[in-house]
Length: 471
Ligand code: IFM
Image 1 (tube, rainbow, N blue to C red):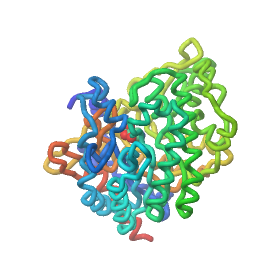
Image 2: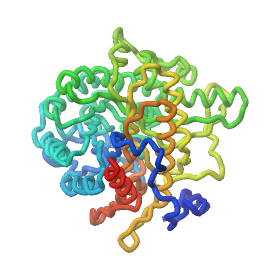
Image 3: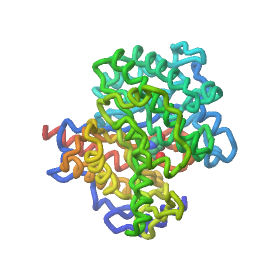
Image 4: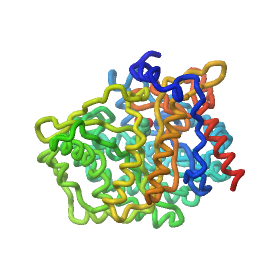
């Protein structure tokens, strides 16, 4: 399948070009990854893999509605079947365990487990009970995200994240799930990537529910963070032994020149991508520079909200993918200036591992109460094909190796990083890009649902075996 990324791919150095295995995965002997308590796992999300959208009482989510609108998702794809994980979960858990992965990060579909009146949907809850029990039997550490973007449509019909009431409904949902699943979850994350829910969902409309207004984005963000803050004490009360945290996607912004205007643009990029979420969580306030970028968009904040939002966390989940080179837009914002001649992935995203290290070390400086960190997502999409039963995803192997080296550098610089989850365990529904973009370390043939272990997964498995043998 031809695309921009494949053109860039062909220009890569021999060490990372197609078909070469000259750059294997195994980290150097002095890497922190050899520590046996550094958790190495893989992640997925409910709407991206489960399918079975009309089964066992599941209600529609905003992504069912959005993906049914022509033009919103590439090729008109939807999550109706996805990886059919709802029916194939047992084989998928076997596959995860056979790869030796130590951790699994999954999310719960809110519309599967509660009806519109807030009553439990027993069949949906039982699915997650069976899944988590099996993972525990296999000795796999479980990270469970409560909200990975599949808001029940009936809540969106009442305003979704623009309605403060959704935050309270989320706390009810967290209450139900933590009562039901206590003891099978090692770590709870309230939200996955509130930046995407707020900005892509309500700010530019690229994601469900598809609204486009900066003021909506800041208000949606406030209600998402409030939902998080309301849920944390509920999770603590119901499931005291587990860790509680949240997952943020972070973006590296670099300046296109040394000019003060471009430097300021890069700063504003990172305020918009990182400080917008991390400041309220870790400092109890919104960064004022955000409102320089988007004048007049201050959200409505009630007394006590910021204290609720900034309650201490046990961990912070960090998702990192790429950097963006920016310049001043000549007004009070920034504009992207894509760099030429850099390595890119199938998404067109620049491969820039230093950005992960630099952001993590920067957060340690900025936030004195930075909790322990898990890299809850990192990975890349490539145009993978099965040839003679094999998938040689050479660019991914090199990508993972370099990003894990960046994690090691951050650890050596003093950042407390406890684990890393590959995004993703298997190819899946990549939101507005449908099934074309393949992020998995396992290939999925969507016409047969056949899973094929990619070379990257084999090398991760080999490393984990070696690490185990040394322990
Ligand atoms: O697939 C997504 C995931 O759902 C959230 N983080 C980024 C991934 C790749 O775009």
